[in-house]
Image (cartoon, rainbow over all chains, first blue to last red; front, side, top):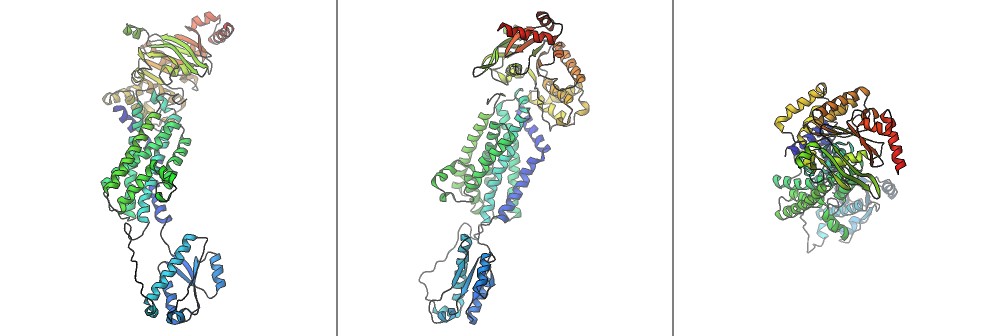
Length: 371
Length: 251
């Protein structure tokens, strides 16, 4: 116990002497949340599109206006097709709507009127937006225009209401989800260096010749970085909820308990690699690719797990962030759901313990342990 | 019975062997060191003296054979055996970012000194090794000679009956070396048993007994005087060369 305390105190002094750990723990979350908040946006954004109106009836002029008033669209008026063509080619506009000259005539006769929507196929996602915006704006205009009496009332209307994230604001789950990425990074960055550093600087040789036991070395690394990691976690939550006003509907106690379990797994990855490789450069590279890449690609944060190929769906089961992302998104968005909390907590505990065993097994008590 | 052995031979190497495949880095190495004796391991680079040394203090696992520190088997009870041992590595192995005092505080605790006695012990060792004026200095900023002095202070903080020094004077100046050997001899006079490796021939003269190492085997053991007589040489260097040549001829 005394020995463990000495190791922890030593580690804390080293952390305080070397500001890089502090930077990792507190600057990294800040940068990461800024990127996820302002850099990544999975929602429809304001799109610039062109409008060419060949119909000069005053009624159609209001349609052009409603394009201009939409909060999803920036509209630019064009007079000829050539200009639209160049604007699309230069990516000045993402698409265009052309209103033919018989548009209002056909509508007033109760006939089917055509509207030409040009989209840029080189950006399929945006092309879809252009199309659906144009159609929905035109329909809205139609229902409030004088032609509305000519519309046949559809027998079924679909009223859509989105549950779970009613505002359809992807930041509300992306930013909490990004905590998973940040915590993976922090857990791994903080620890992947620290055991290897003792080997490289020769201090492990001095440690091993004392009465220190492997369990002391392992806990002496886990505990201080766990505490630092949890402080960083608190800072993350403060940024999310306090500064960026992401709604939090869950329970803070549960949030921190499960986050603690997740941090336990990240520290385990970093420490396993560090103890095994005994080289700072190599272990930071390996730990990053082993921990960070799967966290980003396979955790379900960016790409839904059930749309992955089957092999990868199975692979995600051994990736701790998968459980944590699933937990933290629902904890923020939907509040505490016991089944989700318990299932994810159990998997995180199992993975964390397995990694702890791996760290312990890889902690050599001799200098020639891996020769 | 064991008690008596312990008293006479605080350090014993019993048929230590280290093999990598078919290559013997160290072969049937056996020796016993008396209490208060300075025992030198001498040999050219790669002769296996460092390997022997690391096996003696449990940092490397012997392929066969064992070593005993104060009668305690280093393989069966490594932690217990090591608590009787102060070890100074060849390479500086303290925490560079911690100060002199923080390093000593840390090693005092990991060597098992109680928190209550620690301050007195650290104060004492700082005094003995003349580190008072550097105690707040980070270890990495010390000049090499002082680093070595600090390493030795850290190795001795728990008053071990046995001290292992791996090339303690490599890379330090003549004055510091003399200073070092003064410490070593005065420790031996107090009854500390010392195992030291070196490749300085003049330092070999300070040892009570020397084991000459060559190609993984002990080729001669004795006092410096005995070895010189055996080799018919006037100084250690010639003795060393002659003894190596003899062992080559024998093969």
